[in-house]
Length: 345
Picture 1: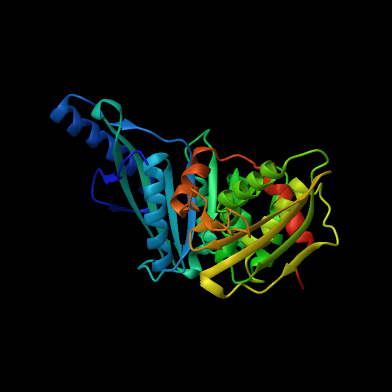
Picture 2: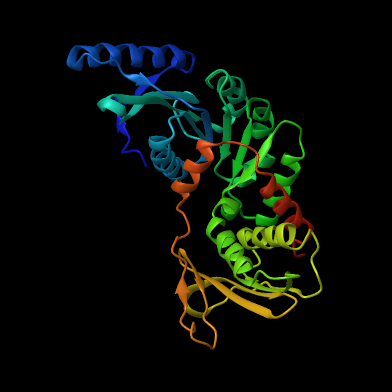
């Protein structure tokens, strides 16, 4: 993180038609105040526009916190939309600017807009939202509840979006959300990403390290045994990644999955791999315990369990990585397709 995000001003309530003029006014006043106080103008920065859709005040509060911390590292115009609000008049808008300290002590600032809409005003949102992204910069659409991927609202916002981000681990139907993301990726011109896959970075590093340790003539992954909850999309995507990257897109007969979360010691995922070279078999046993991926020791000198040095990243860390480079990820695409092909009934 570059630093804490500080408000440049108190949030200002405006009419929905007055959002853009209000943003310009915010920075004119900020420039004038900064110039008077220090002789330096406020630096207005923006790398992309983030459109986040929330249902309910609690979800909105979580998004405000997570995106606030992420945009402290990657400045963005953030547009948060609370759907089905009981706001007076059916629609309301609020604008504010937030800053971090940049080089030379200058304030580097960007905007946040909060829209609240009653249920009967959803149809009014797409043209309003489409008018607010920063021109010529990427637009990331993030429906916090993945079921919104199937909504008419998201369908109407797709022409505005370059990237659609979902979190299948927040879904009531994770397998369905993975299928929705695959269909979305198959649409021309729209990139679909999943926070659940991004959280697997430490897991993928652990598997890659196990492959490197076993490397030898004729190396191949001979056997995979995995146990995780049947509603764990991260587990499904991990197996999809293993299949697409280490097995050449084939799932052999010895690829075993037990869809029941390991119960002992707070373990949420359990993965056993057997690598075969021309000379030997090498076994690796990995578990997820809390925010750690743990390598389970064997019978020899390395019998003690050990956690990988890098913990599983927080959602804010993952968001920073995505906002900093909102591009397609073909590796995720391959893993997603393999996972959807083998979703259990």
